[in-house]
Image (tube, rainbow, N blue to C red; front, top):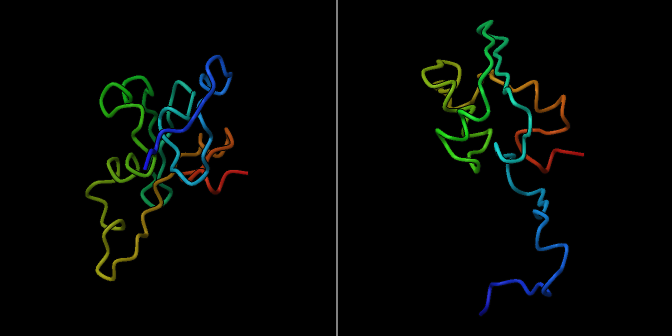
Length: 106
């Protein structure tokens, strides 16, 4: 079974990234220069340079993966009952029309 999609030569679609809404939002999708991370429960807020994140983790690194990475050691993330109560979020995503998962994006 051939899994390669047919695209006619010279098609404009070949240069446009397919927008699939079932994939999580990645650093590639977010074009802002600064990624703001905050946790209301811990009263923390920081700004991370997007270019540095791309160099360190790659453009396909998802914001879900980044959330887990920046909140390592958070006692709310890994509770005894298995429920994630960590409130780490990226306010810049929602301000720019994104969410952690593209399926939530209007």
